[in-house]
Image (cartoon, rainbow over all chains, first blue to last red; front, side, top):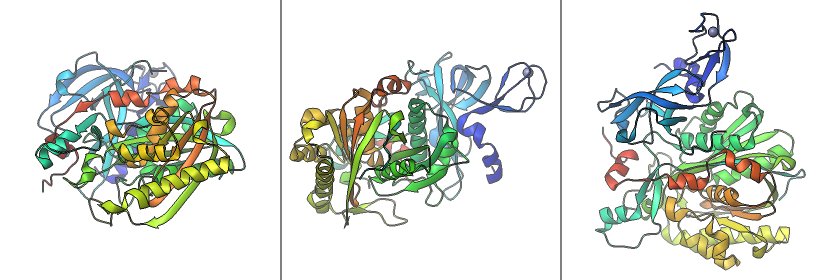
Length: 136
Length: 348
Ligand SMILES: [Zn+2]
């Protein structure tokens, strides 16, 4: 991925910043400027709390190029507390321990390295909730 | 040293990775299973972790406890000897990830294992002078030892973050700090070298003990305090023996250093070491407790700081995971997986 494109994606990728629709209140992730619920414009930035649960998942044992270091690794569709579904890699969990409905939280981790002399790309992943009591 | 305006810690956060390498695994591979080990096990970062990701999570925990909008942070300073890039700041990645950008100062600090406390001292001055309302400092490392070297038993990963602000908002107020620095070549790494060089004879008395003891004594003399005035103390912990001996020499009891002494179960987290000991102490401290922190960085120097915990600790400490929550989250790996996770195999 080109360097400028990575830079524009940083807010959504480093810290799960999406948008909220000021017409119907729907929360959007990824940000797409048009509300999927009511089709009205939605530009207001919204910071997701980063909590959710595993909605579905798969375990990739033959990784995409650039992700070999992590295989086998689980990729999940995570349902965020605020509503949207997000596709993300799961981390700090053994693939056999992943289950549907597992509470997860967002962390920022290395996604890939563009070779030994290229950019290190950071972004969100989800892991099992470390401490359920600390959700305030 | 003490700034003209009173300052302190308004939020703190810890981070320790999930994986543990028992020292017995290193003995098995390199010594045929025979030999003493300086610690029980060390924390190992996962393949998607580095000093930046460790700093980000510790910083988010500190921010949760501080309860301030990230945009009010006027400086993001990250101390580490394992910055992910040789050229490109770690601090800008952290600042962006926590939402402190773009109106903030940012910079990376280096001074071996005391890079984080160095940044902390500067943050006290930066906030006290009014140049920033709040400053975020982090000490984080993913330290590496040459395979089979004695450092490999202990070189580990972890970090701690602190948000510095004025004293009336603080959960721990700074009483004073004192630094002691000399040019001592006990441990170093030249550019382009993957692993550090250390003079084994140099790491004990002329380096660690000389600086740690002098900084602790200098601080207590300046403040008029004595070891018994402190509820708890943490000394930089490259292993278990060094901080134990430093504490004993100064007149601190085992009880006083027990809470902050984490090296046996997480190893030496370098820039995170003494700062993680302090997060562990703050996790259990009571208002009025006096806490001592003494860092050590090879090269060499020590920063000593004295804090008094305030009644704000009670409402803030439950807003993020405790240091021990991270230590309890633990998956043991063998040497083979360790080699893979730490990138010690060259694949091309
Ligand atoms: Zn809408």
